[in-house]
Amino acid sequence: MKKVFSFLAIIAIILVSNCSRIEENNDPVIGIWSNANTSSDNETNKQTTSKQEWIFNDAYLGRYHDLQNGSITMKTDFKWTQKNGVYTVSYPGLPDKTNDVFVIVDKSPEGVLLQDQNGGLIALRE
Image 1: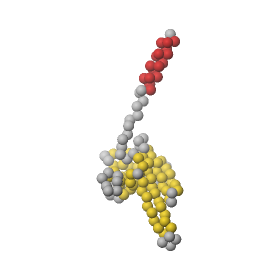
Image 2 (image 1 turned 30 degrees about the vertical axis):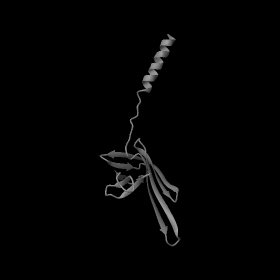
Image 3 (image 1 turned 90 degrees about the vertical axis):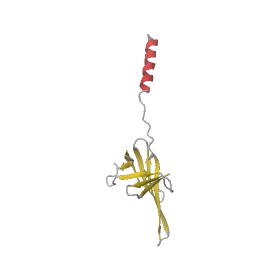
Image 4 (image 1 turned 90 degrees about the horizontal axis):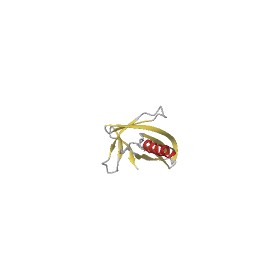
């Protein structure tokens, strides 16, 4: 009786473990995207570097960083959706920040780009 019970328990564990398959998300936006700018102050002759970075994952979530001279000044999580090639990024942790809406342009001399719907550059793929 113990052998039969053990055998049935093993079969049940195998069946339960095979039922939970996670769908694979191969969206082209998954990865790290950034936009870096450098500005100079003519009076102090100092250069300031600012960088925005979006890290998209396959669970329709991500992390946004705003960096000034290499130091993180803002960090928050975001949600993203895609419909007909148009991506919308919402920032639930930042109620004052508006949603970003963009498209991917993959044929560019600079590389793969994120552009807003008017053609303005948002970020480059790293």
